[in-house]
Image 1 (cartoon, rainbow, N blue to C red):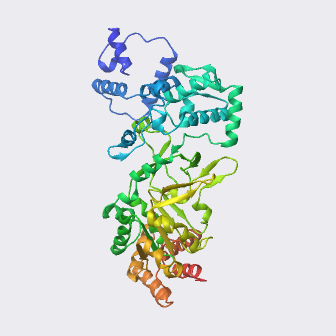
Image 2: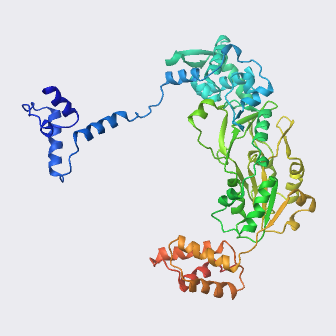
Length: 524
């Protein structure tokens, strides 16, 4: 029965295994040669139990049922998906939308979510603004598809497609070629290039369509850190990698719940900066921010890849979200001794017409840490005078290049960290506006001991109680040296470097301690 034999062979089963008669051997073919080579290899390998016919059929069926790898969509498929997921009527791209409707559109499950706009009114943009961005983008790229233009501007393809048709009617753009999916390759006409040159002289920006300031302010209010009060367990998890006692956790937790700010002060080396960096982790959620905003006709860049951490979005979110926004972790913006007054104002890139949002604006809905307070390149009085009103009223006033002033939220947990005494830096009026002043003290002897042993075990060093006693008595008690939380970590690094250099066993010895202390404290 050749049909049965062929079926068995398709499953990799010879007729002999199933008790069937063997047909005449086939003529030598490349396939037969490969099968012969495979059989030879199998004969040389160790004998294994042969699976039954039922098992082999199950294996083949399981392979057939596995989902195929998802291939990237073609351009035509992307266009079709864009049109299918869109509810835009190209003839109504400028239809007005009420404020209440727009507010509901940007809320999903009670949480702020910037839904993709169906009209220019919903996007908060005018036809001329979007048209100008398209012209400047084509002026820069030369030739581009309509779909790529929509991705660049962060707006839905049917909306951009309708505007491109309008620009073609105005003889500013033309079709270079048609491509799959009913899309076209667009290029500027001579008139369009002339218009684009004029626009570029005013502003070189051609990124995503900027979000109106009013819409940004609404997003800050809906995602405000003041409304988030993380439970004590979440705060403990955020600080789990630091050795902090319950009283300190309670003090920091209360400051977090206030949503207004704190002043961490005390001797250097006790973890003030490390504590401040972990405050934002207590909230454990994400926010949406616009890539750029527009205020009084001027574009400000909000998203900063060096300071904001993007969070991947789901496929469903990608279909529904406004492409002008990005999802990020709640920001933690850190400014140290390099802070100047310029960092607190809008900075403009020369001859571009593009502004950069100041640090406090980039930290909205997150944490702003002023580290090493009192050692900035600007005086403390200058900084405090700049922020005395924002700290009280939770709003800030920024000056535009045109001379206009805009009002923006000052909505972050601001933390000042300093090794200096607060009273020596600021007056009582300012301290009153920072509700929590937390003194970070030196470690107790027992805390220091436990931390040193913990770090030694983490680095896989054997550490006897006698070795730690020797370190404490000889190099701390006798030397009247304070116990700092950073010392165990720094001394262990010295000991580990000595061990790797001289190929010594991982053991805490008196000699290792003496040499580490000598190197570390020689001028301290």
